[in-house]
Image (tube, rainbow, N blue to C red; front, side, top):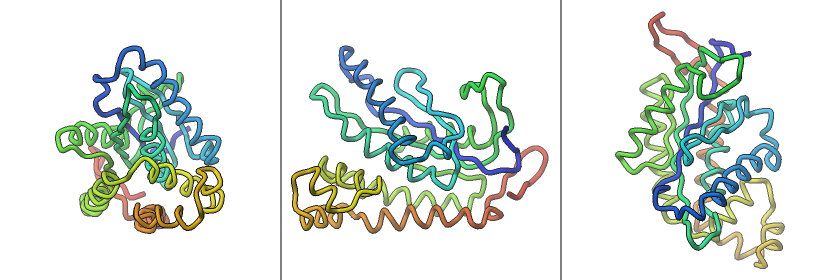
Length: 235
């Protein structure tokens, strides 16, 4: 049951350039997308934070409802996981929009496509605008001032992420998934020092600060303000 006075996060995303994916490869891409969603639930223990499971629509888009505190971590993990899809005929890149706000309507069917609320509207509208501006991550809340902060932080994330190599993505994915540098080194056949250097070159400390600061905001839910036809609501 969704409470209209509770904050939720809706993640809406799509694959960039999906029309260029070879038809024969699409089955593998869809399978990998499902594997990535399961990875979030099982490997990262985010099952309790995913309130409505990820659903794929239009063949290249996806959506889910999460606990807002962990929505950014889930989005960055998805960005990395989908970005290392290993198939010669397809190079995946993903665009992700996080909308923070209320949910007004949840059908008995639990079909996410029929659900409505500010979080859904913010997420969907922002994703459409992202396509025009070549953005890859954006967080939108009902508060314009907070959105200015989110916009600049996400722009910096885009700039940083655009420089990541495949091996840096794999190492970042491992570290954000909770592995130690030693465990990552053993998995990748590298030394701990080389893993440390890769994390530094990829800007891991900056990304971690971004994630931590975002999560800390939800200790003060009153800073998020929703405006609708019934007037302003403070969470």
